Image (cartoon, rainbow, N blue to C red):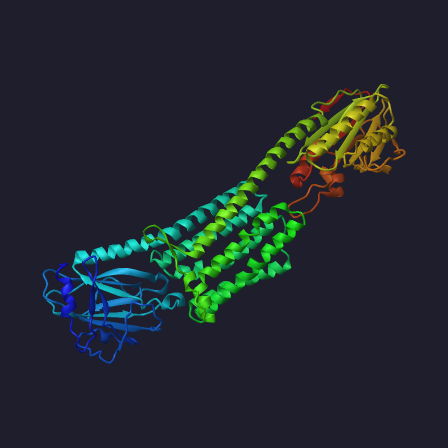
Length: 636
C-alpha cells in the first residue's frame, strides 16, 4: 500500500469537480490538501456526486477561516487508482458541527449535535466504497452559535489510505492532542490542588481569611484554565470555555482583591466594592459574545481592560500599606501583577487585531519535550503560583511560630488563673457561700478571694482585670498577692482598696482592674468599697454604693465605704461583668434588667443563664447568705 498510494498523485483527475492533489504522508496515508470546492448555504442535494460544483469557489478548508457564518459545504472529487484492499478516509473536524457524505451517502459517526456538546477537532473514519474509480467527499458544516468556536468550524483536514495507515494517523493526531494538553493541564492541575489545600487550611484556621480567598482564586484559575485547555484539544465541549472558563476570569480578579486585603488585614473600601460589582456583571457580556452579539475582538479588549485596575492599583495599595508599617505587604507587590498579565497574554492576538498590531507571537506556545506546548498565560499562572507559594510559606511559618507562642502563653495564663480562682471555699461560721466560675474560650482576668481577717471577720474580693491572655492573668496574680498581704493587716475595705490601687499603679502594667471589696463582721455588718465594679445585689435589689475609679488608673486619695446591716437570710450576690455583657447571636446584651431578675437565684443558675444567652467573657458569681447561728454550708 505504501508503494501504491504515492501513485495517486498521478491518477487524480481534474474534471468538473474539484481536483485532489495528494501529498505523501510519512505514515503511509495521503493528505487531501488541494482541489476543494466551497459554497456557503445549506442544501442536502449538494451531497450528490452528480452535482456540478464547477461554479463553486476553490478554497482549502485547512487554514482557519470565518467564511462559514451560518452553514456551508465543502466538496472534493478523489479519483482512485486500482488498488488491492479497502481504503479509508480520515476526516478531522470540529465535533458536533459536521456531517460527511461519500457519493451522497452518510459516512462516519460524526453528526450535528446541540451547541453545548460541540467539541474541537476530533477524528472520524469514513469507509470508501469498494471497486470505485472515484468518490466525491462532501462535508456539510453547521457552525455553532458560540462565537468563540464558530471560526474554527471550517478548519478541517482529510487523509486517505489503507485502514491501518489511516488509523495510525488518527492515533497520531489523538496522541498529539493529548501531548498538547499535558503541559497546560499539568500546570492547572497543580494550581487546582494548591487551591484545595489552601481551602482546607482555611477550614482549620478560619481566622485567616486570606487562605479562603487564595483557595477560591486558585480553584477557579485551575478549573477554568484546565477546562479551557481541555476544550481546545477536544477533551471537553467548547461551551465549557464560553460559559465557565472565560467568565470565571472576573471572579478570579474579585478573589485576588479580597485575598490582597485579607493578607494585609484590611477591608476593601467603597471604590473597590464598586469595581468588584462591575467585575461580577462582566460575565453577562461574555455570554453576549458567546451568542455572537458582541464581537470577539471587542470583548477580549474589554476583558483585558477591566483587569487593568487590579494590576495597576493593587501594587500601589500594597506599597502604601508597606510604607505605613505593614512589613508583609511588600511580599505581594510583584505577584499581584501576575493574574492580569496572564489574561492579557491569553488575549494578545485579539487585542492586537483591534489596533492592527501583530501580537500573535505572544500566543504561540513554548515547545517543550516532544513538542508539548506551554502557553505564556499558563506560564504566568505557574510563576504566580510559585511566587505566592513562597509568600504563603513564609506567612504560614511566621503565623505558626506566633500561634505556638500564643498557645504557650495561653497555657501559662490558664495556670495563673487557676491560682486566681480558689479551688475550694473556706468554711465560714454563720454564712452559706456559693460560687460559680465559667471561663471564656480566651483567658481573662476574673478573680475572687475569700480570706479571714485577724478580728474574725471575713474579706470578700471580686475583680476583673482589663484585657485578655497572659498579661491580664499576670496582673490578676499581682493583685491577688497584694490582697493576701493586705488582708493580714486587718484593714477596712476603703483603706485596703486605696493601698491596693497604689501598688497596681506602681506596677505600671498598662491595664486596670475593677474590684469590689467587702468585709463581713460576725454581727452581720457588711462594709463595702467599689473600684469601678458592678454593684452587688441584696435580696434581688441593687445595692447603692459610692463608685470609685478602677484600680491602676491614677493615685486615688481614698476609696469611699458603704456599710450595711445584714439580717438572717439576707443574700448578697457579687459578680463580674461577664454576666451583664453576655450577648446573643443577634447582638442583644443580657443586660442589667435580666441580671437583676435572676440575682436571687443560686450562683450556678445565674452563671448558666448568662452562658446560655451567649457568653463573651469570663463569668464569675459569688453569693453570700448570712445565716448567723445556723450551721455553715458551702457549695461551688
